[in-house]
Image (cartoon, rainbow, N blue to C red):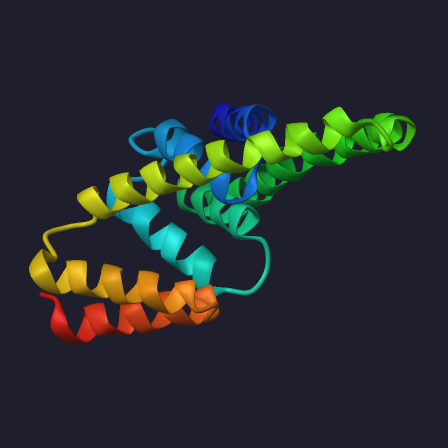
Length: 171
């Protein structure tokens, strides 16, 4: 029971302190690796959540919860993940509905964009560094993935093909 409460608190905290989605991956990494799952399990979870349809952050939460405490853990992690955004969005919508014509609201959102992009870059860098010894071939997969995604190719397909290439060519 204590593990389930700790899981709930962890995902509640992560979803209160981050914007969720890809931006929460870095915070999830620091909060869960070594406590609930290993580095290797986290890399697998990020890969699976990127390939599967649906919310990446929610799938990542359920994977971590399931790895930590089975089906109840997955359920508790999901609940801890969806509760804060659901409650907060109702409040934010009520406030923004009143402020929607204010110019500073648009500028605030524009100011968030570069910070979130940098956060995602550093999280990806940490995962790539700790993902294993891939050598030059791994860097090649990374570069090709970047180029293909820059041409608006679906991210799920890119991740799936990269995983297949890893299975076939990396030790």
